[in-house]
Length: 114
Image (cartoon, rainbow, N blue to C red; front, side):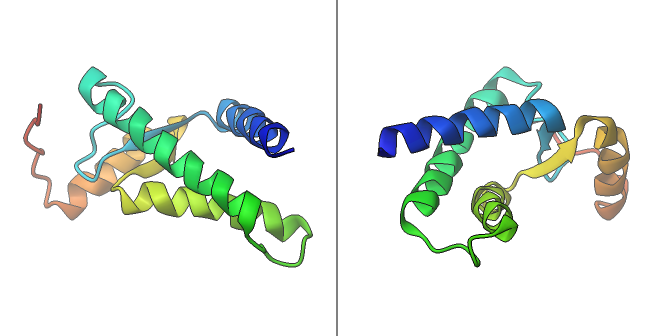
C-alpha cells in the first residue's frame, strides 16, 4: 500500500514538474539546474524534500481532506526547498526574477562559486 502511494506521488510530482516547467534559482540569481555541480546538489536536495513530502502524505492530517489537502502537501516540499535556499521560478520568469534579485543586491554581480 505504501509503495503504491509513493509511486503515485512520484508520478504526480513528475507530471506536475513537466507541466509547470520550473527551474530553481539561487539567491544570487544563478540557475541551479544549469550548472553540473549545482545541479548535483539540487537533485540531492530535491530527493530530501520529496522524501519529506512523502512522509507528510503517509503520516499527516492535511486540511479537511478536500482540495486544500493537495496544496498543503505540496507546501511541505516547497518550504523544504525554500529552507535550502532555492527560489522556484517558472522558466519564462527566470530573466525577470534574476533582475529582481540583482536589484536587491544593489546590482552587484554575484561571485562565481565552484
